[in-house]
Length: 244
Image (cartoon, rainbow, N blue to C red; front, side):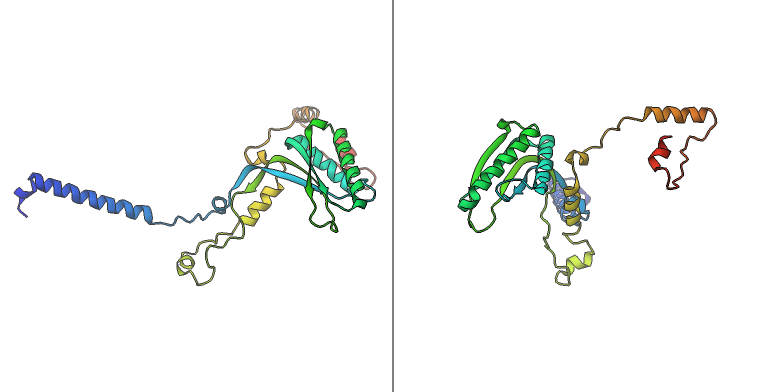
């Protein structure tokens, strides 16, 4: 190609089009090469904060009294509602139970509301509904529920999109972790968190022991060892030794 042709307008247009085409091909290759598979289990199964329902099933026993075990469960449930609950506290009563159990169900519901009143839950915070019992021969519980913010895994566990064997040669050759790895652990961590806000930020420091701190500072100023010396000889408790 003669040099004079490269200086013509048609040559400049052709070179510009060729460069644009090559640049587009290069951009496509850059977008499609490389693995988009998230290798970090925290990216595959992130823990998120979302509203969810908390529920507790209470079974009518005897003539409708609350046994100590279920009474303790209700106390803990009501305490959680007062701390983290949103909206009303729903009590779902079974309808269509046997006549011998109907009165016990009503008395159990009244006993639950009485415990709620003792815990500081007013009558306006309750909402009573009912559900139809499918089989009267089976035990039908009274279900307490409320809405609260909970930590949970956004993805579903137990999903296996790849064959862990030799069926997917490309996946096996890349030596990447399988999709379900870490999902159960993330779910367990989310379930064990008492306050989901702890996953967002740490808690502030509590109050210091001013008496203990002043005594330690004075010991250092006097050239004494500020550490505690105690001996557990079976006669004195550890608490009494530390408090001295």
